[in-house]
Length: 169
Image (cartoon, rainbow, N blue to C red; front, side, top):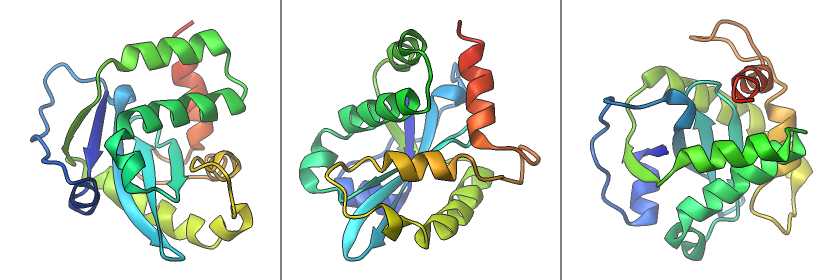
């Protein structure tokens, strides 16, 4: 699994990013990640490169950044299960992720869609706070039923995710 971090996120995590290498990569296991601030708290927006499925993490602290790969994988699992995907399929996806590697971002279209997505959730996030969990599952479910336009034409990220996970059966 590759997490492509923006410079802002890499600085917050205090990590050095490797350059992106497209050799032997599968965009379904690549996620762009960006740091955002809301109400003086840090959040991370993750977007899958292939499906544009998004996961919003909020209230991130340094302790979460120190084990960020586990936080991300646990959040993906929790969110996918809440969407109603079969546990075996979700576990297979997580297993296929393998080790997490952090690289620089490389896809401007994903970054542009993340910026649009960030704007669309900025007015919705308050409805899902306060939360005991850093993974805002209900916000994620709402957001991924929103029509996205751009390089994937007009589609809902949840539909694209269903298509991809359905092919794993």
